[in-house]
Image (cartoon, rainbow, N blue to C red; front, side):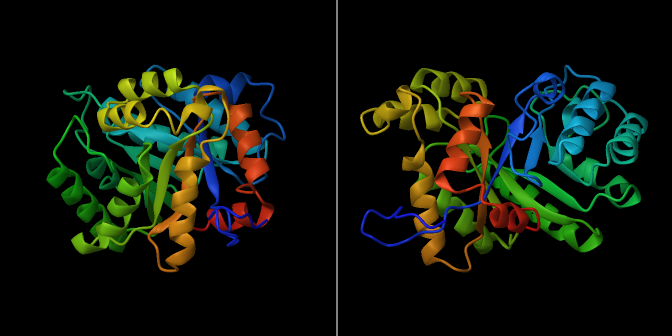
Length: 297
């Protein structure tokens, strides 16, 4: 489906999308069957409160429903190397997982043996247990946990790691609301020797108050300021309508830049998974061919 997302009659192809849910939603939600197109990447969050058994059960249900489960591995929340290996082994052998997201996971002081996502990748478990795709974190607005220079160097190391693994790597970013800033960040990565495909994080339909709450919880302070300054233009979000004011500029940019680093969006469904799913379906991001293309990038 092509839409006039440019405002001037030019037809722009909607960008493909993935979505994330909590382990409890993955296991318990009665809405999940048939809610997303088959093959959709469904990320399963890990904030350190769910056991390996719970996370595996969540991934297994997502896989059984015909989606592509992408469990989070929060490095600084992992305990031991043996526990990590057991989680990867169980995820792959019992839930059929072949795609994961490895992130730092917050925490000023790690609770276990790992202090960074690079240390998790270097264990070799990705290749040992047949993981074919790996997402790593990107922070277009910076992070309260480390400097921009540190973040760029970490992405350089992961780009180099790509040569030592059989898995495909991609960058999945934190969410934000300043499309221009996100585009500039993604396209500027090549200047630092980073040429991984980028999946830009965006918030699904939700009220402004909800978005500000999650922005504060996730430490994206610049997003809070951006929201406050642009409330007049984003007022429709308060009523729960479409966040296309953010996604539209990204799609227009990609349409004009055939070699863009940006290949899709990753949706944080703060206003509810059904509301985000309906928005993505209505706008055409979840066409069948878009999903099939997205899982290969």
